[in-house]
Length: 322
Ligand code: ACO
Image (cartoon, rainbow, N blue to C red):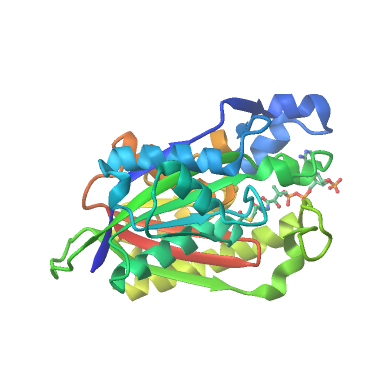
């Protein structure tokens, strides 16, 4: 079996917080944020609006674009590091609210690499014949775990959700058959201190706030994602010239451009939403996929490369024949 992306969806909270808004309450400026990150604004969830609300809206949008009834779904995998509650999984809340009463739903936690991890899990369920139709969601409300007094982190993140529907199709051996061609995931837990949340149920009994050594993360992000890309290309017998679209995790335009340069991809072959969404962690790739699929950039048969890196560290890549 091969898993084909048959639908994409997204949701962004209504409220937009601009760099100028942030500059009125913090010692920062629109210029500093744009120069260092490419970010101009971010969406922020309303009071009471939870990760599952964002996830549900993106999920409904994806199912609609796939023209798939909920009854056909047999698995939901939700990537999030900002679940509604410590348990149960946010995926089960989405399951209930979609009216899905069979199959299974669970969360995957790999921070900014979450969507690539969730896609890898879902794709492997499909390949193993254990699921036919899978909803893969990335949903986050990072605004809830930011230290809004810390200018070096709070300006970087935003809230949002994206989703895709994967559907099993028999592998027919054709050269350009659509589907997920490969996923590669990695982690190295030694880098905990570079990016973590300083709380949790078993350590502090609090939710905690995000802490980051920005330079350290930047340095590792470029090296690790480049290695993941090389492995993905080699695994599929591809050269950089074969890639039609790079859809990277959206953390920082400088990291994105470094990756594009490595692949020798012109700027207009890279899907970038970081200017408007900021870093939405696990939601950033499916949000970018939904945008580029809706506006017609991603065409059937295109070769799409995903890459991400996040806290853990975790990182990974996926290659998809769209
Ligand atoms: N406004 C104004 N000044 C600021 C701000 C701000 N918002 N934040 C930090 N500064 C100051 C610092 O205090 C420092 O001042 P100093 O020189 O007087 O001490 C100066 O700017 C430089 O700070 P650095 O942290 O060295 O700045 P750098 O050029 O490394 O940029 C950044 C910081 C943007 C965070 C960068 O390191 C980065 O993008 N790192 C990657 C982090 C990331 O993307 N994390 C997301 C999660 S992981 C992932 O998704 C890949």
